Length: 380
Image 1 (cartoon, rainbow, N blue to C red):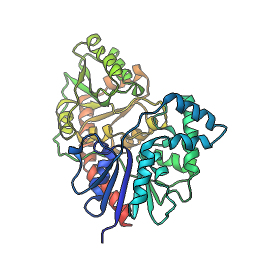
Image 2: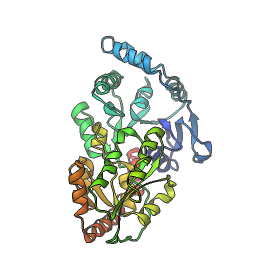
Image 3: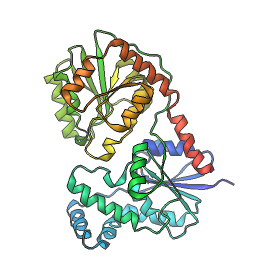
Image 4: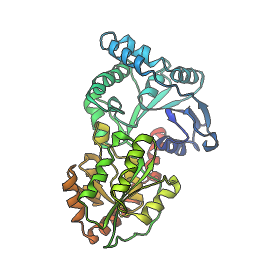
């Protein structure tokens, strides 16, 4: 008889890449239910039972008041958390369901999943180091970070049966600060076989792809063009998540005419081929506004590797370890002029070598190999 697993995530479960990987890994061998937000029911996976939650908007002023009061009276933290109706609804759903496991994605889900019935085993899948998730300044780091830590540490023990996260460095943070052991399951991309698309001496094409978010400081990549050779172009493939920021970035197209381009989003299934055919170098991330940015191994890194691109890394430690082990690109200081000089000094032979190494690494680090780890957790 199949065991039952409930996946819970306060994200759009029809779009969230890591959730989709969990579903793909587990749906054939377990009775699988998924609780979360749904953007398009047409994208739902057959054979899985979905419970849709309605997303509520935060009251910013009330949140600040509760967080401030919580510094003196911790009970306000609980009051703030359970003001969100989707958290209450999700708790009601899992209390009614018969299940062997709960796969709780991120800190909100682990709180909602903390049931008195300890027969249900919880796997905590932390997509980031949750005390610093979406943190943008010192005030948020102190106020919001404490709120999350207080809620998690006040839960009935044991909080979870097993834990997974997204990079070795983030796993280290959990060990140092919580004494939690986390297995690493990378956000690796689906494998696509590609031939190497050799870089040509008269044009070197840099790309960054993802969401247009102010916190990512993408303008720092654009500023490289002031110092880069004229043969080098920079393109962004962007989802206009923050439309105001997106429009501000668009203005650089006039400043760097025929050297800077903003391209529309590409379907995920076609992205790898598009990157492979049109670009040579990828800058997956540049912002280091919080520890998650500093220690990230983002989807776009693995998408670039699958596509066979050379990686340019502005000193982010997690990506540095990938580069040093696999020889897929270069590390540079996070300083515009020095970074541009190191890119200018790259020979065509070196770029093509890094591209070839990325294609070799893609055979080892890909979605197919990583989702086996999800199955193994439950088999064990």
